Length: 565
Image (cartoon, rainbow, N blue to C red):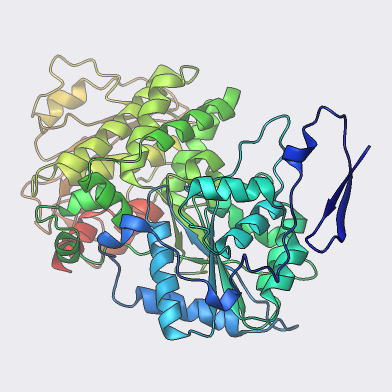
């Protein structure tokens, strides 16, 4: 039999087949509201959303960040689509609990103050208006999920923060794109969508065209969305691309501008530079850490989903993941782990890149080393070493040099595992070399301070292997790290590294009779590379290149600048 749905004026709005008479039709029937009903505010009358206690936490950002992002959003909204210019949506991408919602709140408030001719529509796919669970009886309709939330944000007495109210409304009302279009009329507005990534799997061309048609093509319309993952921008752009490519502008969310500012605004007087760097300089994570409620549950699920997804290609997948510490390549990061990273903009070509957050990557590598038992034990030892070194970086005492050594070692191990060698710091050749940490060693005293004695404990024989030796606090005289590399013919080469957190020079000469090359790695390096007592002193720019896209922002130079700023 048939189910007829009528509006308040007895007009038939929907004709649908009912499967059987036991289907509880009365309960399932939904009303399509009229845009002229007194139930809804007009777009220009919608009040600012209530974010509860977030307003009690100071907003931490560089001085011009809010002004600059609002300028970009308004410039895009003021444009009309033309053959020469495609209007772009704005993406705010960062890890879970990274401050996306708070940044969006500040942006909306600022835009209202700068240009009140725009209506601000805010919808969320999480928190108080979450998506229903997808199962065998419920398939996600991304367009319908957006439309019902747009209607709810306009609902009078809707109590935007009331989850029960939203569920009652969504269970009894049906809203489609025509309703939204009629309700918007010709009003100027900017739509803000929080956590659009939650629709990434079900996103389709129909949903993308709805956003494009109603919030991009017309002059006076804008679209801003937040996401845990950077890959959603490319997927959305692909669906919106016809008839021509449409860029999604990714805006880097603010980091703390200085240690002094963070200490004052967050009321955290003893916050250290390296603690801030360990948390990625992300205000949201710093706030959560101060409140002793670090976001661990979602992180645990993300890591488990990643480990389950990589299957038999575990070592290859993890190597690709590690390489992103250097490259920032979005395509090389599994979708499950993207939400544990933060997005930024490459300075050279303005593309979106991903950067690691030490706090999260410490945990990721620890879990991989413990759970991915199909990976050879020696490789898992390297993963464990990276995780432990992240911890050493976080807790090292100031000026001890331990944090500087830990950071350099993290990158050195990653470069060896991913075969991304560097002519100025790691001048090896070839690929597919096994990498080991602190093994093999056949000497009687691993913690000797005599370099000759230590070297005698490193086997002469080997093949296609790299071994990295770091005795830790028991320093070999003049050398902090020793790297041994055996090529495919079994020839061994030794490389030594001495690390200085500041600009101090070395006191002793390099031992050329033992080492192929010896490198002096200084936190405050000289502008040009040079030779100091037979050591190759690495230049500032070469060291930045060696650290790669992520670690360059955690270096000794970075934490010194953070303290000065």
